[in-house]
Image (cartoon, rainbow, N blue to C red; front, side, top):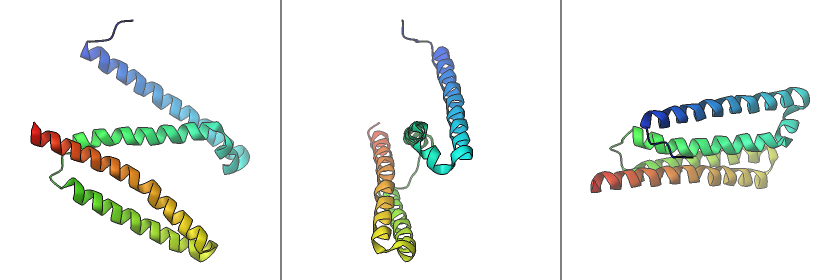
Length: 141
């Protein structure tokens, strides 16, 4: 099979892939919705499609970050945005930890707050990397 070199055909192929992705995602959401109706959230989360859906959503979000960095140039320093993001994630993690500590105990609150912080930092670190890389390309180019 030959590689497609015509840009119009490449664009058409990408649109077809996007359409298939949307239909597949709607099918997965439909199946998971049926599981919620039949057996509740526990049954839905036990379904392997839940894992596929979550992994796909996370990867799609990470890939779209690169597009948003390229689309919206910013004069703001990438470091300033990263530090602001870390402060916001830290505040959210502390607030959630305190709220959960009041109802479920301090150990659970610290654990949940830590998980929120650890899960919140990598996307902002990746975004910082993309913005820094873009800024370096603009300076060099």
